[in-house]
Amino acid sequence: MTAIHITDIESAINWWRQRAPTEAGMPLAPELSALAEVYGRMVWRREVEIDEDAVPAAAVAAWLQWYKTTPDAPCIAICSTSQGDAQCKGCGRSFDEVQNWCVMTPVEKRVTWRRISLEATAWRFNRYSERAHEK
Image (cartoon, rainbow, N blue to C red; front, side, top):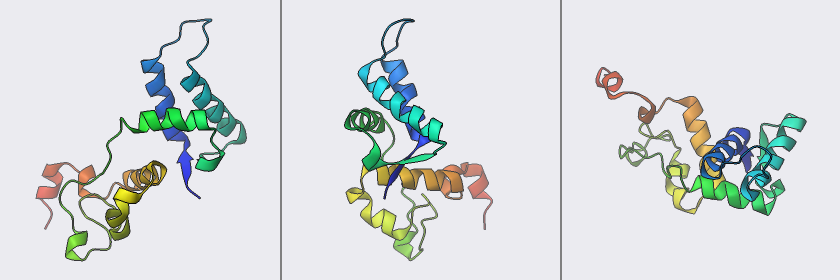
């Protein structure tokens, strides 16, 4: 099971709100409405993730349009998995994630992005000056 995190739904909603602003009393754009329905259901159920198969097609399509505006790979061209590390020091992905990135689904990629962002241990999340002092 691969799940979409509520923060990705929120980000997609905010992206659509900028793209298709709505005036008071006017209906939401169809994409916003579809995403808002999913978001509302998640909030009501106090869920932070929703299985991608449980998301209606219209909401998935709207989410995918937002997804296309996000960076694809976290690679910073310093790949330590090629040197035998199980987890890349540059981007934070596992060896398998690096090897299979091209065949991963958008949801699987966002799950990986979320994990490495929360861990924030990879060099891509540190300023260069911090790395320069490492031994």
